Image 1 (cartoon, one colour):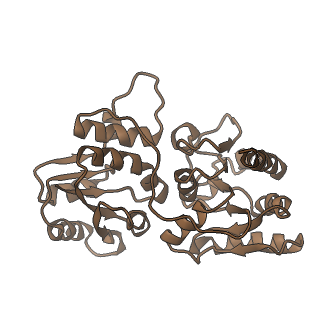
Image 2 (cartoon, rainbow, N blue to C red):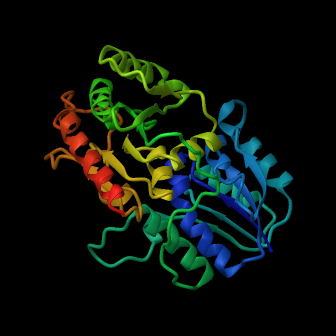
Image 3 (tube, one colour):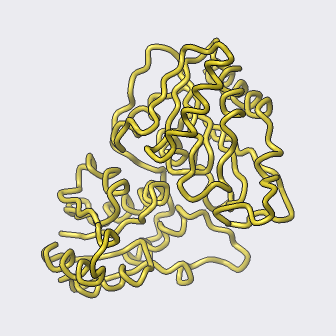
Length: 322
């Protein structure tokens, strides 16, 4: 059985797809998978035992995108089943051009749900696969296949970035304040993409000003495999609503997640028993905007560093009692 799967473009969404893919493999345990998607999303699946090929979609990089999609589809080979977890026009073209007798494309509107029911995105993806297989399995745990990094001491990770936009980001000074408060009991690791080096550098400077020396700054220094591994080995994590937040959920890392303009009931950490959400129930939230339309950013400003520290200490205390 050969299956090709187009995964979401965003890192966090691709982590949230993993329970659905495991459900698909429960129906086709010997299937060989080809994964098609963005560079960062594809890398999540490099160590998956059923994945035999990754195809990185670079059709957005210039030139005629439709022609590139055609080339990807025709060079991919023949498949028994093709599905896409996206509903984009170019996803439809990719499936159309593929050589496969069965093709399915994700549609949020077609996911079965009861009136008034709020589904987590993980559940939506899993119900899409339920529709394909005809078997209702429900959504299991997130699953990644990178081994946890082994830190020498208890370690707190902080992830200040959020690729979607500035509205989802808490403040460097407050991340630093929270990290400094935990630095006697925990080493500190700053995470971030290459585009978030400036934010990470601001946090590092704030830590230096507070006399904190036991930190490392990995922003822009890790590939996806290293990012997963380093997050998987953490003792505690504080993060914005982001891809790394979902990676932490996959490894059930005790996490404080700071939410502002997004729908926490749909995209919070999935099945992490030690996941805590901090948010404010604002009249304007969730606005789902990349930048605050009111220019006040009150949903994030209202969350103080000491509030985060209190929750981190609660998680640390809970872990010590186990």
